[in-house]
Length: 332
Ligand code: AHG
Ligand code: MN
Ligand code: MN
Ligand code: MN
Image (tube, rainbow, N blue to C red; front, side):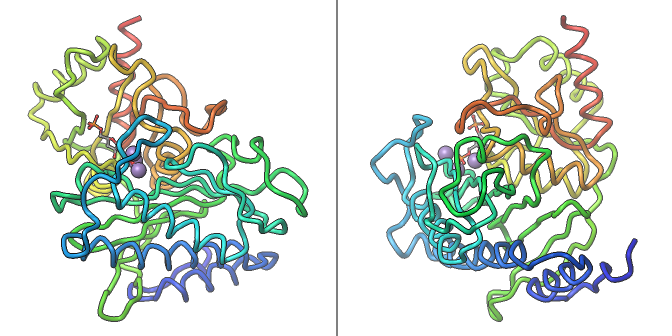
């Protein structure tokens, strides 16, 4: 590894981003600024989440989003905070969000970047004090600078991401991200208001014994997924399912495991969103040595056709994803 890229545990996120940028002589610093903007919004959202029970920001907002989900107050608050930070930062021309019907133009016509965001992931867990998150993807715009970004700029394949990450608001708050040179994790120290490098160069175990799936919908799973779940039980794997994708993913990334949200007879396209959830986590898992597919195709090679497109997701340790594929292939 390039020596310039190795930084010690305890390095602040700001210094880490700056040093990484220096290692690439033609980097202009705009992506670095964008990442700092996201970190700032994450700190603000973290503050709102920590005090949620005291601030009357738990519970439903009273409206549905374009996906037909009841928005929670914190879904709306997080959406506003991230959009505001990205608009103020100036590097992003266009944003797409799980919580917004249409593309959002920031007015920063010179901005080179597009951001796709799930501002608050796991919103059913807000009111019960369980880990939740934020997920983001960054793309370079395809259109010329000087005007708004286009839908085509937003509908890029996952393998065009220049950065992706997530924030987990858990027992501690962490920001984990990649720019395509490995995955690094930072833990937030609320007393100092800083993220510090705590998990350098995260590599995911090639196999594990944790499987994460909403087994309550077992009857609606494809036959291959049913058989794989049975295989997990026969092999005494542990079932772990928080119901916040970020939290389930984070655990499996560190410990080894697989997360599955298949297409079901009730939800034939699956539930998770390609642009706001699957692509970012696919980029991260691959950078950490794992795999992400829709059951037959690499997530990052899927050509998106709609902003709010859903897709099945099988993500985690390589050997486990390969194993579920064997069962899925045998089914056809
Ligand atoms: P979001 O809160 O951003 O809408 O995402 C919810 C997702 C994901 O976080 C979680 O893994 C999944 O929905 C849980 O779905 P089920 O309740 O169907 O298991
Ligand atoms: Mn939602
Ligand atoms: Mn989500
Ligand atoms: Mn969400």
